[in-house]
Length: 270
Image 1 (cartoon, rainbow, N blue to C red):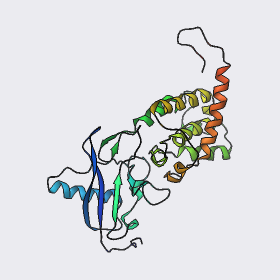
Image 2 (cartoon, rainbow, N blue to C red):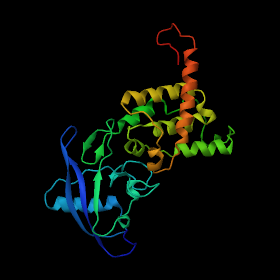
Image 3 (tube, rainbow, N blue to C red):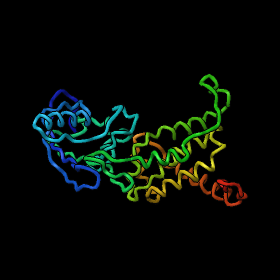
Image 4 (cartoon, helix red, strand yellow):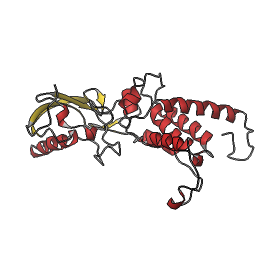
């Protein structure tokens, strides 16, 4: 049973993961949260709980947030065992207290993955995603100013598909949902949205090889095609992009194997 949207206040019990710092032992701690509006977001509820903790001299719950509009991906939380909570296609900041019954117990913990070490409480270090992005998630060709955007014709179907992939907000839900902690959906989205467009062709092979290698080096697991990633994605990015990236990776691997190796300093295949 889910609380109806109304002005009736609700109360819940929270089981929150508390961890003083990286590498420190952690545990679940229970808190009572009372007289909550069902229309406040889960993050606003945590704000209220933290206000109460500070008034009693306790350390507030550390959690990450920024835009609170489902855009930045910062608010990554595991809520009742599901990345971002019970609903499909929304981030943690878009999960509202009306999603939970009055008197419910809500378990909140950080995303669990070896490449996402806990910094404190509910905050994890997801800089591994930044390293993957820096390895190839860019183009270096000159594309002109904004007014030149239509100078290179792109078929609408291709543009739409590229935009579907570009919606990835790098939250890490795909990793948290996967039993192998695979980052394939994230990498596939970043590889595909540039690889589909004309401006991204010059570095297409180098991009996919570099980003996949960086993903592997960071310690993410392998994909076993069970699609928990796309089911948990707040932007509903399709796992079809993983197949597209695999085709690009195989093609780039074969082409790089037959490229002549340069003898110049710093030169090499791929």
